[in-house]
Length: 377
Image 1 (spheres, rainbow, N blue to C red):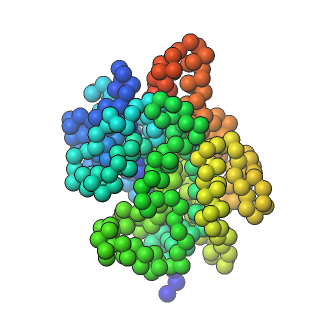
Image 2: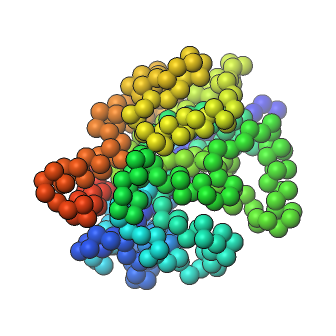
Image 3: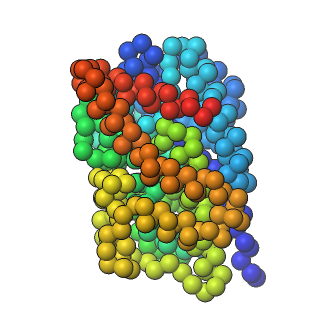
């Protein structure tokens, strides 16, 4: 029986932090805000581990245009309701100055169990991410495409990086979030699997010993979804700008289709060991767009202007088929303007040079993040 052509539908999940409009510090979500957002967004809104975090998720979208409408509606609704409580959402993976020790987790069974299971490690989880699902109906195909898509995870991280500050200090990293998240078990780059059966046997080895209840407790940078017939890219920092989120989603969708298209020609992307991919992951985490990534085929470090043009050329046929040219070409704008980490640092430096104290300069960064969240709504 022939393998069906994937539909390449997409779904996007984003996590936001809630800040007080007066102090710009983090604030727990009031019960009224949660109730109103739940009512307005009908199952597309939920609490997160910390009570200053919330999460939204689009419906299954046939294309990036539908995803834009969905995401704009979700962001605008959360922002509108939050304002009634003198709060604003920001879509950055770390708050510039808040301390994780001052935060409290959401009092729900799932999060209480996480607290008990993961102890001190999970208390530091004052971080937000974004996840992109791509619809692939056939399980073995999900594994095959996941094995190949691992190569591009550092590219996605560099474009998305939005967490340069942690507890009031510039970390020197474009993405500090992963230094926190990687302390959890079952994180990082996914292993290479031979088949869906091989993946299931590995997961079931932990489930059968009651170490995890299901595959939702596997938090790799890329995984088969535990709930949907999708592969789920989880490497990205959450993006302040709506258009950046859509560019990342379109790139993940297009790369997945490109790899599937190669398979229809009896071709595939070369599989590299995680040891090598992890080196690029670190480069993206540390330098963002500034340091370039290793092209293992060419045996050299390529700058990001070259890498972006390579990605555009590589996916041209798929981008046309998926009608996401605008979003893919926006990678050039991200490079020209800097990723969010670059822009946050620029705001901070401008404020300091204008005479602000370091604390006031960090507040200027939060103001900037609020502005960027609202820019395209």
